[in-house]
Image (cartoon, rainbow, N blue to C red; front, side):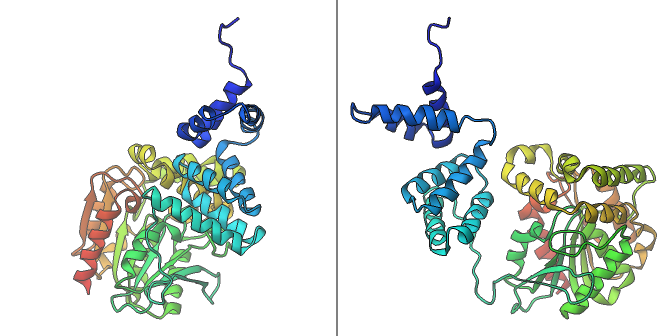
Length: 406
């Protein structure tokens, strides 16, 4: 027998430290007295081992449940303790926010107001205050849907700005939130519209398959309905394919185009890969492909370093409707603009990532060779979602381009 066997108290202390941190646990245990030592022992064994040690829920889920329950019961000291521990423990801030938003409905707005205030105080102390997102008329993000069918969800900001109107188009499997940070920057000087492609996010999911022309037609009616054309089109991956189609088929609607991490045509061998992906999603859902998608979208170094950003992308991909994803996947696999790019006459910025395996630099060079006067920029330390991996470089390249096109 081990001379120092681990008992339920020791196991509970491990969980307690993992959730609340060493400093708090040391303070509680070291300050125990003859009066409260048995209580500290009891909660360590039964709460922290028997409950927190159960295998049915992971610690992140339990943390969020505690926030919701202490919020509902107005146990604000306990809420503050667990909220701070959750933030320090790496629980994504987006998940904490969604817990408090849910609590606004089931615990009441006053409780949610207090919970948000306490959480903001904690973030301020931790030096983690989120970037400002004012709700003034000049900065507020307005969301609605197109009148035309199939309906597309759109987000508009910077409505009173005087610069060129910008439309931003996301990658396969993601949604308009992909552009949140960049859109907020641009909206200080430009009207900015983002939208969810059909089959994605809050947009309609008509029966598939879709063609690339379908997606381009969606974009054209979106621009017309917005009434701010011709626009500067900023598209990444699938969004870049749509941007090429607009420049080829609807040149009157685009003032300039930014084509990031995209392709104008895939080699024949890629057809089988896209077909297999469609089959997998149709039979097994988004969970069957999400990890492979993230591996293509982000470099290994970024995945290891920016775990919260990757977790947010994973959640977005998992929320994507399998029917819409498969249908758009068929459109992407059939993209074929390469031999028509010589007709593109508008200013064009092409952005590539040196680490991008999904749309390698060679594809961007082939596009640049065919679009007269186009500019090619390659980010050395970026994979497919270059706007996420190199946001400052992406924003700078775009701002310089916008100044040039007026």
